[in-house]
Image (cartoon, rainbow, N blue to C red):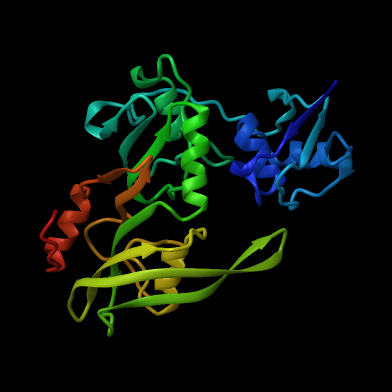
Length: 304
């Protein structure tokens, strides 16, 4: 059975594998690649690769495309337990008809993956907040990063928010405690970051506005406003200038955590955007361990 879909402005310039996940859920990459090779996924009646980026009015044809869970070799099923974070009121920043805003705790992935047995989307799907709705993830936040995170309650809102993120109409502010004293108190990092796809290096432009809130000879508290949204962008950029984030186990090559804890000191503090001329602004309070480290390292942040 063949089904054809037209690509609208919401999903242009998006990789075909990502388009499939946005429209049909978290389907494994291997299953998508298999269907691409077999010609069960075509665009404008032509075979394409997973790296193909959609164009306006593209016609995407799916032939007998139906994912069966048993085809996934790695089966991870969310099982609630006593140790699982609950979707209770102390995490909620805002809850309305179209989306919910939460203060995500560190150590919780936002979506499922091969290494994530529990994730925020599954947790909220089973909560009272989504009894008559399906949760949609509209942006990324690293598992070890805490802070403000948005979950859409319907497809229309998910598409709208995803588009705002992609068009850089959502303004995010992060706070980070990093090693060493930054010389310049403010500026812009405009750098090239490298990531790999199947061992092939891909260079991406990354841009971040930064401001030092407080510092001493050993540590700095930095406000970070990413303009682009590259994977691990803030962590990579701070590491590249010799000031890795405290608690970063991946991009910290020179320093060792001493004492307090091993948490990544990167917090998504604030998010702002506009819908139909209405301004939305949300702030996530700092975790206790973050505030404790600020105090111990003698760094001041008036708003915590």
